[in-house]
Length: 258
Image (cartoon, rainbow, N blue to C red):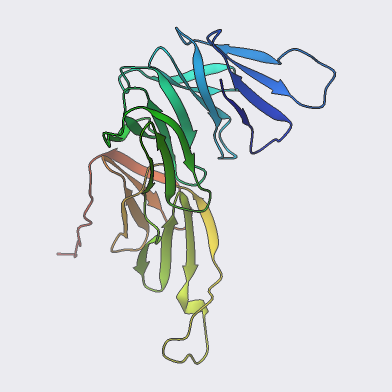
């Protein structure tokens, strides 16, 4: 079966086993046994992967029960089970290193792409190349390689160019899941046409949805980020969650005093 090294702590790794468990181990200790086991699959566990987000102590696993599970390895709890994604053995799972999505694939020939924040199914793919055995998402890239019985396919997901919104000199951009800002008015001086500006970019936080579009409010006090089926309104510049709901797009109204 598979093991995965924690990208945030190279002394920790997880192993998937046919005894229906995921075990967490520590390298460099005198212990010959696992630190603990995560138990919940109804059949053997084939694959496991760590989340790369430093704010989330999550692991994803897939098994012969057709289930994909997300675990919190610090709290030793199962957070969510994707029960309807596969009808056969799950053979490969992976967190994308930069984009908040989880991939799962199996002997049912299907690749599922799940939102790692909301756990919603973003898309299901079937290329007709029979069973899927392996997945790999390249860091700092939109490319994902998928290995089948009959071929290897490389797909591209997400937006390669950050989404940007502008209001009165202020710029907010979403780069994968990172929200950043800078103020063009602070760039003083004479500039030639075509000259590349290097503004002072400030990190605001992490986007809580798989962003597909964004825009400032007319007042510049808020900006919205829309995912495939939900939206979040953030205050600016504090980047606190001011509102959220279901929907694939959001339009700001311009209100003028009567």
